[in-house]
Image (cartoon, rainbow, N blue to C red; front, side):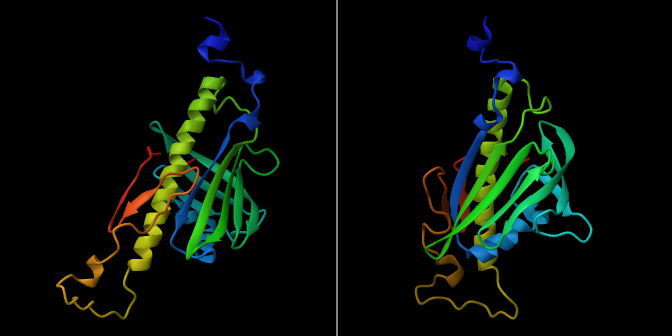
Length: 220
């Protein structure tokens, strides 16, 4: 079986630029609030099922040149990554490169745009260079891209869900919500379809108080 018919090619025949994608979703918060959340890298474990213990270096924060570390999980394996912030433009864009600006392997970007009374959130993934650690064939890299697409879709749904739940959370001091005249409590009276909206490139739906994901699961 030839390399072409098997879907396998030497890594030298591949271009890193072929492996990239973008996903978008609407969330119920202003761009400034979304930027605050995504640039606080320690918060990613709230939404990503396979990233944890992400922290900026001592005395570092969401500014260009800052470094942070994090742990990732995939297929039963765990490893630590080092990443460097390469873009920090509140409240519109935040990006970082896994491995650092000089010799990085993957770039992640968040782009935020006002949309109605919320924000259109765009998350992009771009392979910057080929490395055997990611795979040595087209089949390997196609599988990695599909995995990361699932991961980003899951992360965006979880982010939208978390933001909506946070907005609904009571703020101290609070008073019990009065019952409506029809006997329905105010907390149960959310519109049937509200929260996450669909945009080209991503299919997200939600019904309060529970969210339904229309993607697979799985972020590096």
